[in-house]
Image (cartoon, rainbow, N blue to C red; front, side, top):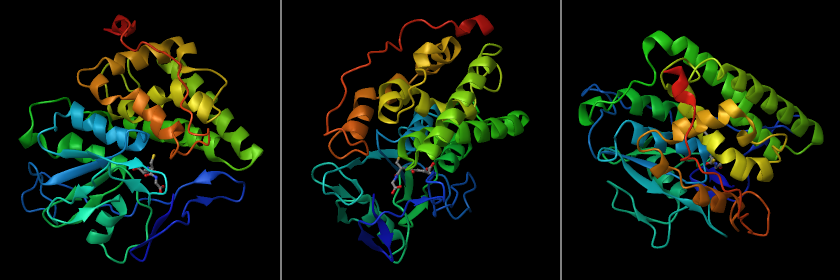
Length: 320
Ligand SMILES: N[C@@H](CCC(=O)N[C@@H](CS)C(=O)NCC(=O)O)C(=O)O
């Protein structure tokens, strides 16, 4: 994908590779925080913040999952973008989009970034959280957006679980670090590295990590104990995409999640959580990745299979 250079779109890719051909991304640049505090720069409010996401993107999926888990549907509006042939990065569906608060009609997500910061040089990524009042991008880093959704909008939504309780924060952080390197990034490493060595390294790390998670899930219902936490929901988008997309499209083909008894039951347990199935459009994810404008070059042919019934029973209640 291209990027914004001094506020103007260029088709040149800003992605960088390390010396060994390993795929590495530049960090997100908008890192402000919405706070529950009415005097904060970005105070939590109903209807003020807008989430931009894409069905195909596992990072954006985290924020969409949290919007469902934290019952924020009526608080934070969701807008979906997609990749289009000959588009300029993330593109709004037919007809474009009127930017909330700016009353400006746009075709591309990068135009919203340029309203916020007319001279910025950055990747234009999903998820993006937009503030309609200050007309600024609050944040485009999924790990931070989900923390805000977890704790800062409580006054505007019904009670929901805390997915980052203080007593578990160190354990959750450690697990996040483990799965970020060993699953989230390793899958991208398998799919996008440009040397055999870099692919091999990502592949080995990925399956070593999945084996370790399988073992851990033999002892407890969720990654950090008997309750769902942020660690589970940061991993989920990659697990749900694994068999239909990553196994084939990203060459992660040693084993499927379906071949791991604990991981597959765990995946179904999460999928069957209230409100989650509704925000898991697996066919849409496949179209976004394998389709004509997606990152996988498959002549735009979207594989039909596999058919996995995530609604069949799981065995995780044995942990209580
Ligand atoms: N660290 C970011 C990564 C987000 C990201 O890389 N999203 C991809 C889509 S899956 C994207 O928008 N890529 C566009 C680009 O890199 O130019 C996050 O977690 O929010």
